[in-house]
Image 1 (cartoon, rainbow over the protein chains, first blue to last red):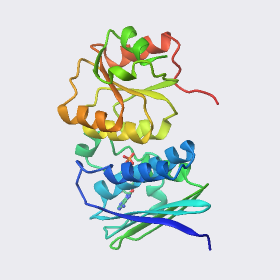
Image 2 (image 1 turned 30 degrees about the vertical axis):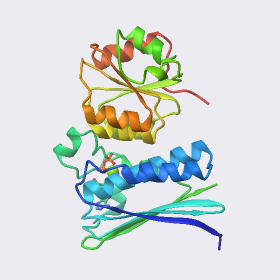
Image 3 (image 1 turned 30 degrees about the horizontal axis):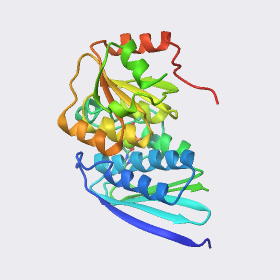
Length: 141
Length: 116
Ligand SMILES: Nc1ncnc2c1ncn2[C@@H]1O[C@H](COP(=O)(O)OP(=O)(O)OP(=O)(O)O)[C@@H](O)[C@H]1O
Ligand SMILES: [Mg+2]
């Protein structure tokens, strides 16, 4: 097991568009303070922001968690539902259940999960309709 | 291209960030879809958009965007300017449409995708 340097947990509320991104901004600041390489910070920020937006837009609320270890940054989310019925469909570029309201705000193109996957070295997603969704992403330093 | 060159080329105005006019943009992205900006972003980018909500600035913050240009004469709100100040991103506005503004910057030599 790799040595743990830091763990931060951020509560993310469903539908709170005013606060959306605040936790990711905080995560970005923390990684900067730890002098993580700026390209890796950018990748981590994209992952974190896409995941945070998904909690705000699609979930009933959840947590965004940052863990920094000696050799890696792990960003994960856990939410309380409603879950994803078909994960392979959700991972397809362009597939989205977002409302027109969300689209008019500039989101809901079905690009988030593929973008998270692209920016992570490791990506895991667990979900089922009726239960919560868990995403774990790792960037190696 | 410097932020000041972008402002001049677009007959634009600075809404925030007089002190950032000397910063350099290496590439630009024009869209009203933040999902696209997030998926296709590059470092040291100028983001042109007709969308005016605070999530534009949040998105730009995540991507280390140097300057945001609001097109079609859109006026950024006080909330947008406050978040720009907090995040240190220059805010410009221009009367050109998104299509025109992108065309002008492209013809000035600012590329869409930089090959590294
Ligand atoms: N935490 C979540 N809980 C429930 N459903 C989710 C969650 N995250 C994603 N989804 C489902 O997966 C779909 C695809 O997500 P993805 O992030 O790729 O696109 P999007 O959020 O719809 O649009 P974009 O990310 O481009 O703004 C969503 O439309 C939604 O149906
Ligand atoms: Mg999404």
